[in-house]
Image (cartoon, rainbow, N blue to C red):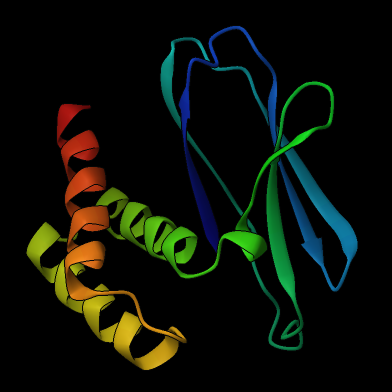
Length: 130
């Protein structure tokens, strides 16, 4: 599983992805952004028996939670999925179709198609700029 973050105004700060499984910390990955707009990712290989609750938190240097993937719901998962697929060089139109289908099948309630398209386009634009 991959978690992507787009960090804004974070140059010179310490940012951490904290992974938890069923409420227990299993990994922490620290980043030192070198510019005010910086993209980072971390990953965790899941074993077949690890089907419980996973969360990823983004922390600042003081340990304050900046983002909690579990609390952010559908949009955060779409952002994560979009970043992962674009990073793997999947065509943005294919990414949109996949995430529209995923949203309709898995999100309760599903996001509006226009919102999904906006998430994909925004991340694709950032990806093209790199």
